[in-house]
Image (cartoon, rainbow over all chains, first blue to last red; front, top):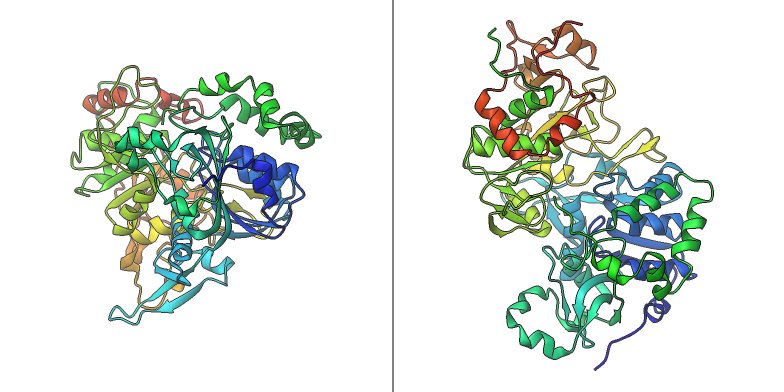
Length: 293
Length: 267
């Protein structure tokens, strides 16, 4: 069993109009090499579901996004994501703006194969007013209350980046948080994983305590691509932090005439190996300090 | 009023005023988003409410608040893992009190961090609703407002109701205003709460040297004002020492424009 693929092969399996979930959180552990592969492709009309960072911003800038399902889009240390803002302020994307926990529940509902999960989250807010497709249900039990029926967010594909995987699709996240990656994977028909390190299956057996760092079963992993530094400019703790300087360049590009085409020419229209050279090499990525919160 | 022994900044005053939010909360998770709110939660855990729980703002529960900025050898005292997915388990269980910074607040205590202007085509897109809807229906919340003005305290409703407030018109069937728990609003001018008649927003205390008129002029709706509105308590020396320990790099000094003193001089 060998699930290894290139990111180009992965993107070739995606289709226009698909709903894609992207793992990670804000500027943390985003499958950015895979996002750049999508930016280079002809894919369009995507529905993107994400705890968004520059992944969402770049897809918006490139006109790939038809609809965005989100609770926030932020680079954390730079709170406002410039290309997402632009897309919203120009009304160029459809949106489903929901609470962070509603997004979690929507993924979980899809993972469970149920049409919705009941929750109090969203009650009394404009999340319900702006998303009339999200219905309330009456409790069949003694509480007698109405609850939000958070609909399942089924994904055609989940895209995630992990620090380690083997070719069978066993994926390990040794950083402090796996975020909602496991739920994205479980909500998706197919999961495409990029990894910083591709290891032999034996690797996992040599350190059994690391079994706790595997958050989904390998039969949920469709394919694995070995992409060292593949989360850059987002972080992949404990291997590297996010690239503050690069994010600043990216954010500044949004203010410049021809800023996005220039960014694309410099950092997107190239192979991953060329990308690594242009940002100073893999060694430079691995030196990026972990963020202190 | 007595003059405190040590001069203090407005940021320090706000940290101490906001720390009061957790005093009677018992054993809940205290979350402060941003430098001043986080220092307020940290200060409370070290003084008014040692039972509080906090995280390292990343993925672990800690036994004592983590000082801000570069650690310089400080070892974080991790109690347990607390990744984002588990945070929601805690939120929905209700044993949390968050201090967050909305961009707009209305008379109901409804708050906005999503966007300004027309929702279909916003004038200014901000973060998105984040966890505000879930926080506000699940547990206690307080707000921090670094600049008290009518753009924040809006007339009418906020542009995008991201967190639920005491607005009877928005209650779902079976729910009551008792299911909502908004505590304090700490601004650069005063402390507000919802202890006016019928949960009307009330001036709880005015910061030293701030007039009631200034607060009313900078608020887009009517506030309840009790007779003899007190002055916000000045930080004491012990609090200032704790704040210094929690913020050794003095990040608090860059949070408010020009880092004004806490005791205002006449304008």
